[in-house]
Amino acid sequence: MMNKKMKKIEYQFFIRVINNDVSPDEKKYFEDWLLQSTKNRSDYRSFVTLWEGLTPPQNMLPPDSHDQWEKISAHVHAEMNKTRNSEKHFQPDRSPKHERMNPHKITRFFFEQRFLSAAIVVILLASGWLVSNFDHLLNHSTPVSEISMLQKTVEIKTQNGEKKSLMLRDGSRIHLNSSSKLTLPDDFDAAERSIEVEGEAYLSVTHNNSKPFKVKCGNTVTIVRGTEFNIKNRGTTVSVVVVKGIVETYDIASSKKIRLKKGEAGSYDNVNGLSVPKKADIRYALAWRNDKLSFSHTSLKEVMDEVERYYNVKVVFAEESLKEKTITGYFNTDSMTNLLSIISITLDISISYSNGVVTVNERPQRNKTIKG
Picture 1 (cartoon, rainbow, N blue to C red):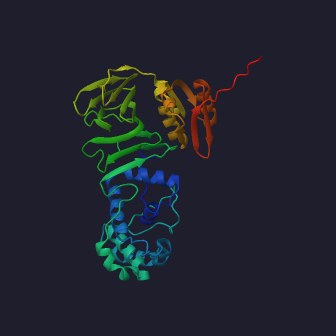
Picture 2 (picture 1 turned 60 degrees about the vertical axis):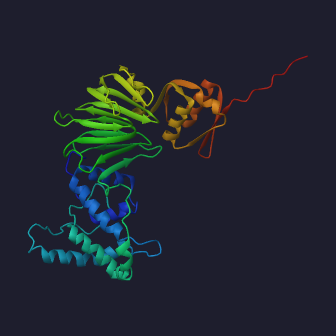
Picture 3 (picture 1 turned 120 degrees about the vertical axis):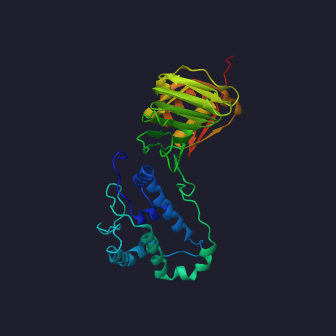
C-alpha cells in the first residue's frame, strides 16, 4: 500500500517496464512506486536516460538483457563487494538470486547509479556490441518512455474499457475513469500540490490548509484543501460535483470563480463560462464509480461516446439525425447487449453489434397490408 514504504526495485525490472514486458499488477505497482518519492522517479529517469540512450536502431540489435544478466551478475556483485570497505555509504547486495518480478516480493536492493551504469556497459561489452556501434551512440538521441520521466512529469493513462486507482505521496486518492489521463509534476507535494486531469476522475484529497490542492481541467482550475469531488472534462465542457467539503472552481481566462459545497454541482463551457451552483444528483454523477452509466436528457451521440469508452467498441451512426435524440436513465453495465436493447426500445431505433462495431440505424418500417 502507498501509505507504507514500498520496497525498492531492481534495475532489471526497469528493462521489463521499458520493453512493456510486465503484467497489469506489476505495472500498477510500478506506477505507485514512481509516485511515492522524487528519488524513485529520479532513479528511474536516470536509468531510462542511460538504457534508452544505448538503444540502437532496428538493424543494430543489442544483446538480450536477460541472458547477459545471468552471465555478468557474479562479476558485478564481486565488484560491489570489493568497494564496500572503501565507501561506507554503499551497502552490499544481500538479496536472493534474481527472479522474475513479483509485485509482492520486490528485492530490497537497488544499484547505486554508477554500478547500474557499469552493469549495462558490461552487458554490451560482453557481446562486442558497444564497440561495434560506438560511433552510432555518439549521435543517438534518447527516446521518451511510456511514462514520461524525461520531461519531469508523470502521466497515468487509462484506455477505453479500463479504470485505475492510485494514491499520491500526500495520501490523496485518485480514481481515473476510462479514456482519461492524470499528469503531475515530478516534484509533486514539494512546494505545492498540483495536477492536471483529462477525461474524468474522482478525487479524495487529504486535508492540508497550508498547501491547497489544485486540479487543472480544460480551461478551469479547481482548488481544494481537503474534500471529495468528481471532475469531468469531455469535449469543451467541464463539470464538478462535490461529495464532501468545499471547492472553488476558476475560469482561467477571466479569473471568475464559483464556490461549490457538498451536494452541489457546477460546470464550465467555452461559450457561457462558469454556471451558477446547483443541487447535484450524486447517484447520477457518480454512476461510473458503481459500474453504472447514467444520462439526463443526454444526446444519443454522447451516450454512444460513453458506450465506446466503457466497452471499448466502435459506434457508427447510419444517419446523422439520430445523434440528436436524447435519453434519460440509470443503467447497469454488466451486459452491453441488454443496455443497447433498452436504448433501442426507448428511442424506437435499431442498434446492432458485430465484430466490435455497434451500428445505430432507423428502425425499419413494416409494410401495412390493406384488406380489400
